Amino acid sequence: MELSMEKGKSYTTISLRSLAGWLKVTLDRPLQNNSLNATVLHELHSMMDDAEQDPSCRIILIEGHEGVFCTGMDLKSIVDESGAGTDAGKEFCELFMHLLKRISASPKIVVAFIDGVVMAGGVGVAAACDFVLATSRAKFNLSELLWGLLPSMVIPYLIRRIGYQRAYTMTLSTLPVSAEQAYGWGLVDEVTERPEEYIHKLSQRVVKMDEGSIKNAKEYFRKMWLISDSMERTAIAATSGLLQQDNVMQALYNYVRHDRFPWEKHDH
Image (cartoon, rainbow, N blue to C red; front, side, top):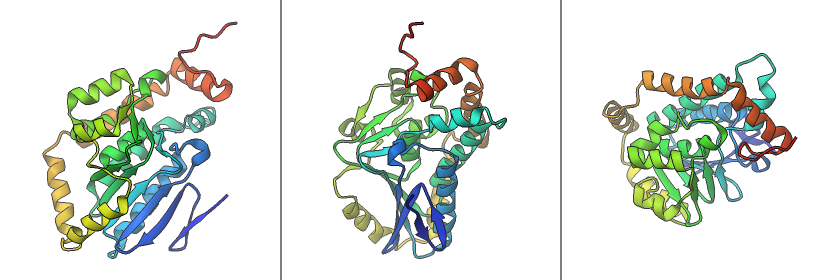
């Protein structure tokens, strides 16, 4: 297993590269389609801890690997841990919701670069970022309803980006949204094959700003929006509650253990 070393820390699910004034963070679980489990979330929180303590880092770029940005919750990890007597679903939801809050409130500028597939919770990570860049092949997809779940933690940040009705139709249709369409909706800020050029342009402005001013701006915009501590608790409860339902867990189990999708009929 490859390890990424940054300031003495070892990471197994992400790789980091420090550049002039910015940090490139690569989600690096290609065999799991860059899905998120507790380990990934803990490592992303640890990365945020270090980046926020580094005055030379002004911008964080989060990207995927091999045509996949992020496919959301690792269903296998939820199924594997469901019989261990722990509430893995609730722990995941709390870590994930807190990560979105941290990204949106960080004194650093956080940029998502989408090259290819982004699904479910991965859409939430992108929507929570300050800027979203995407290549022309990017596809955004909320697939939760197909699994009996809800994108409950994604929705507050997605609505902030694209509005109520578009978030609503993405949720109910589960249909993918192209990069061009996402740009028109405001989910993507720029369609580009070269994110470094955008980062360079952005960094020329960011270095002239005080980090405190960036943090103040983010805090002010948060007060102007509907995301609150109470809403975050509601979002966590919605998904963690569904992960305690037998029919939902059975559907996830059938997929993880038997490679059978919930909508496929099973002949006895």
